Length: 319
Image 1 (tube, rainbow, N blue to C red):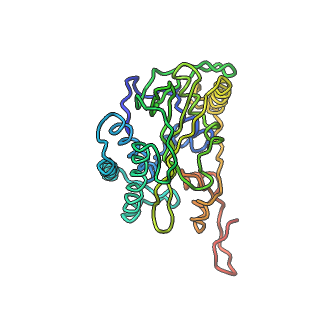
Image 2: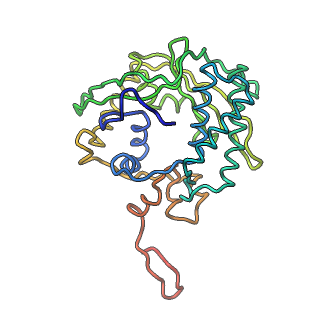
Image 3: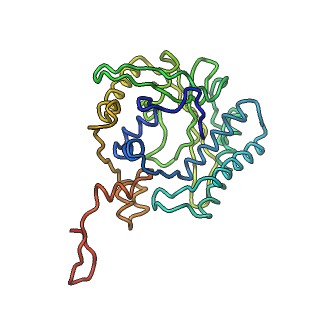
C-alpha cells in the first residue's frame, strides 16, 4: 500500500510503530533498512495482507462493493496487480517466489478473504464465533504528527502513522492478517505488549479503546482453511503511555537517530525457530527464523566462519 501523506515524506525524527518495532526485534535489521538503506524484498504474506487491507478498508467499509464473491474477486485482482509490479521473495531461501508459490498464495487469499468479508457482513465467522465490533465510521485516518519530548535523551520525535479504522464508540483499531503458527498467534498478552496501540492513541490525543481485528490464517497440507475472525479489545491507559515514552527514549538512545545514527547500537539478534528448521541445509538462512530480507547479508557480516578443506576427508569445514 503506497501512502501519499498530506504531511509529506518521513523525516529522520519521524517514527511509526513499525520502525520502532523493527529496532526492538532486531537492531541490525533496522540498521540495514533505515541507516544503510540496503535493498529489501517483500514476501507473499505481506502482499496478501496489503490486498486484504486495500479492499476491506478502501472498498467495502467505504460503502462500495458489498457482495462477498465480488469482494473476493476484487481482492484477488488487487493481489495479482501487485504481483505484476513486484518480485516477492521466499524469506527462507532468499530466492524469488515461483509461479507455483504465487498460485498457492492466490488460492489461500480466496479462502481467507472470503472468511473476513463474510464474518464482518454477517457478524460471525464460519465457525459461529460472534464478531462483536462496534460500527466502523472512518478508515485509514491520518492524524497530524504528534510531537513527543523524551525526558531522558532530551530528543523530540514525531509519531506518524495511518490508523486503519475508527469506531463509533471513539475507539480505534488495526486489521491483522495473522499466522496461526503457535509462535505468532495473537492473544491479549501479545496485544498489550505491542507499541502500536499507545502510539496511535497518543496521536488521537488521549488514552482510550483499541481493537485488533484478527484474521487467523489457517492452512494445512491440503491447503487453506476458513479463518477464525475475531477481535482483541482493550483500553490503552496512562500507564501504557508512560511505558511507550520509555521505549521511545530507549529507541532514541539506542539508534542515536538525532545524531544521524552516529554511535548507534545495532546488534544482530537472530532467532532459531520452526522457520529455521525448514531450511536446515543452508547455514546462511537457517541461523535465523525471522521474516527478514537481510538474513544472508547479516550472516555473512556477523556470523560466517572461515572455512578450510579437511585434507583427509576432502570436505569443507568451518575453522
